Image (tube, rainbow, N blue to C red; front, side, top):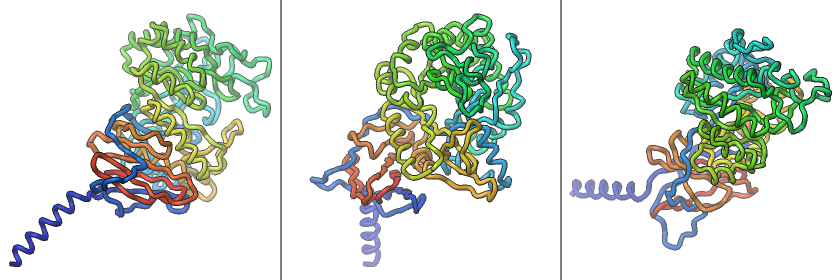
Length: 469
């Protein structure tokens, strides 16, 4: 009799386990970060249930990863910490058990969050690149990158110049526009003409610049860092007070078609060439390059940032064979508050529902001022106070982590009903990940439908949530 009761108990337990699958649920609010719960289950759907989110299993684009940008100011802030604390920050950004940033960006030379102006060759008219050197990077950016690689050895790195070497530009300066605060030292009479390409479009300079890219990739390879892709110009549609260079679309396409692409072929370089990083809403800027057959054969994808968010829905539909990347999240004003993380979520939703396979944040780390050398205070995922040595993980760190930790390379975005409060994915192992953001001031009861199953949960007001099953 005892044996029969025990057998029945085991049988009922087994049936219950089959009918109600445990679900992993992590939530974050401004006051309670990264709270785990085992209170929800995947159960058989009840007849007549109204679903807030319906997951059909229909697949959209493949996701390649998430990350941010390595910068000199980020490493400078990190170096204020002890080795133990520094390693902890690196772990929390890049290790697969934490934020799992596996697809990261780096500048080729000076950026607006570098310490000052520089390139890999500042010797004027050195067309043979005899003086090319990454010596400066060995002391700063490469140390940052190699520390990250220890936590995530398979990470991808893509690169773009903010400016060519100054001697390759028509105004012979890293900046394109004079600063009213006098930061950049550019006389106003040498401002780049509004709609003109700032690069010297002459054969010798174009050849030298293609060689510059080739040498950069080979030099980094020798350091154990593979560059997965290059984007020939950061924000080519703007003349900026920081390192920058405006390019007309037809000129950038010409550089790719007749110089950069052929040079990579000649040197046996496998690094992909992407068009961008495009910072305009004008779709024709991208079309001009992609409709250039000579350039298009080398272009594997397009990177968008800032105003490019309005162009990606158009271009991704017209050129579905290409890869699309969000290359730089908008940077805020240094307040690092919850509402800005909600805005970043809206950007992630915009890009990922319109074909982006990568979403890259901008400043991984800054000090407590958050200020660039040219005076713009910006947000960062992590703030390090150089005086107190306090490390603060800002709200945007958590919205990134809610996706990047759980959505693995090779996952598919799944088609769901058209709402802006969630995204759904299927990982290569078949597990489903649903990210839900409640921006309302009240808690929200939600039902998620998947095949013949359902999950019912209450998401807190002003919260980020990840469900995995």
